[in-house]
Image 1: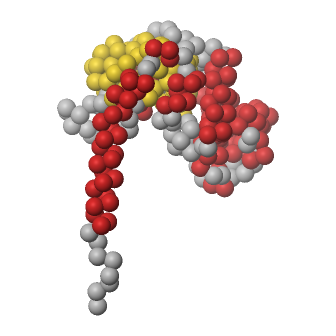
Image 2 (image 1 turned 135 degrees about the vertical axis):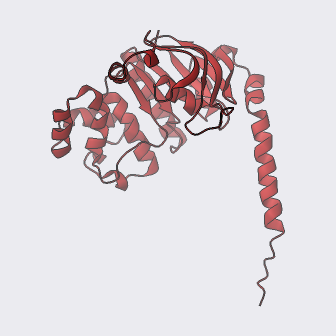
Length: 273
């Protein structure tokens, strides 16, 4: 089993004692499973991914990763275990002056020695591996481009290419499609899913695009207010379940838009002398 959570609650650093990012979440994910996380903004999707990646320590409950309790072992052992995980944040941490080849090869850092890492910064090693990782994302022509010359969508795909050079056994991917058009979004998702399937790696992916989650993932977990609202096979997820998951957040969004329009309406457009 890749992940097992039993009544996990988490709190971000500096948050109030009663302010939880996750609330008593129980979840089990087998090796090789592909799971989509959906839910309104602030539902806890990112917090769950960071918890699975051992980047956010639970304040209560039991967490097992690869049948190991990561917060019950020494930090050096936990660091080695994290090398088996690949966490891709929504905004990839790509230094702007860095070349794309170096940015992609950073995905292999957990497997490299310090000497290999320093040497690759001076003169990139395994350049062909970076090139091959960029090809499925149609970015091979950007191999030696600077990261700050890439568009937002290109930077996002560059971050995904890191996963392909890693040796990770689990991909934890946060909103990988937010800066992509529909065609590129589907292509990027398929590359991640195929890579995970080929190496029998677990894929847990948070998505705002509910239609893509329902069309491409065999298992969907709905989150809201830090809790699991449903955890079901794709075929069992109904339109009513989706509507209930997002209903109030949609109402709140409409209220906020109405408030903004009201504020604009009362602004006097005629300049005063």
